[in-house]
Image (cartoon, rainbow, N blue to C red; front, side):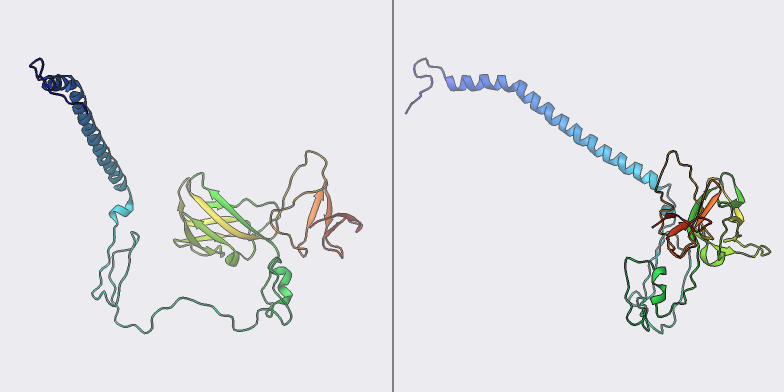
Length: 288
């Protein structure tokens, strides 16, 4: 074990001298630590300022939103019996409930009888049309045609617009199978050309002409879903081919298919519905 006795031989307190010298040497390090602490305080202050600026930017953006100015609250005179929730689109109004006959329940639908005839089964891979004879009530009112959808973008403000239909194609059962939406709002379909259109109504004819009661602003999108009498697809091959895809939608064997090549028509009017026949009933092609 080493035993040190400071200043015994020289009379000087060596430990105190060394300790004082080290204090002087540590002064630059202490200043660096102080600067480090100051910089960290600056960093934290900048972070806090950035957070405040971000919150300010978000709040200024919210000031542009209609929902900010249309905040709706609902109050009830008896919260234990009646409560309600209102969104920003709700009108300012008041309601009085004096009597409740029956509480609402979730909607359900139960079939009262058999869907399919005895001995028939549902084929999930088959179309409803192919199974129509197996239904217990087969009176569906099937209509032959093509279900289409188009979106019209108004190039200029106006009331009249037109669907793009191939020659010989018309709309069918317009009142039942046609829907028109503009800016997310559904319009009531009118088919009588003599009718006086009201706000929220659109006149549609079999040629795909649309007439609105009010002007549609420029750049608006009008979505139209409709049933057409048929679909016509045309293409010009760039090379010899043996197989083509007529449509991306399923084609029923009961549908009439006509292929016209260089003015010559081939139809599926033979015994085998999936064969296209020439005028002399010779098989030209088959389809699936």
